[in-house]
Image 1 (cartoon, rainbow, N blue to C red):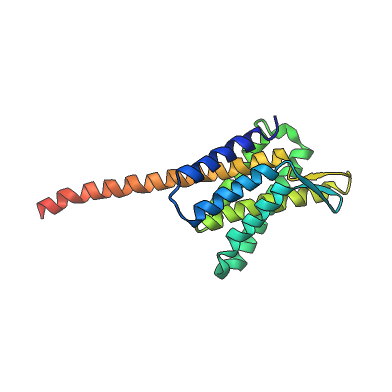
Image 2: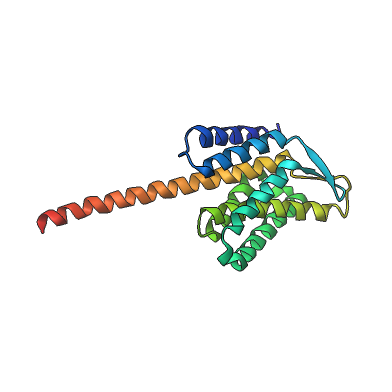
Amino acid sequence: MEGIIFYWLLWLAWIYSTFIMVKNHFRLKLSFVILLIIFLSNQYVNIGGFEVNVAYFIFLLSGYYLVCKERKKIVLLIFSIATATFAYASMMLFKLYDPVWFVFDYRIMFSVIVGSLSLYLGKNISEKYGIFILSVCQGEYLYQKILSQFHNGLMVGGFLFLDMLVMGCSFMYLCLRLQYVASFIEQMVLKIQKQPKEKQG
């Protein structure tokens, strides 16, 4: 069923941000935004002939907020976002043209591909998530805009899209956690290796 993954993952994210994260202003903002997205995900507005999900706008604004925090690198970020945006839109068009190639659920494949690209292009956590969110949101609009040349009454930010977006964010979170664990283990190994040398000295 469309949207099940979206709701499950966002509820888990809300529980984590509300009860587990360290208490600070970011935690409060994150919990509020997640709750707002959940409650408004069934609301649509008609803009330019498209039915646009309100949650889509919230994700889009959140992406711009994350990217605008890095004003010194704005030119590089614009190119990075454009690269990932066209990659997403191209894959969606390719899926439409030749779906036989997509053996697995395209939501999983696209979220992993664009998520991996965002992890590579971003230099810090804000950049990585900002690039991913903006890329899929803008790529979704570009894809629907191309289709609007042939169809009417298209939807931007539907539940299939929201499923893919939160799956990508979850994939990136797991990758960053694994990176942190790997770095922690590496530091512990280096610390253990130094101890015998210090004793010998």
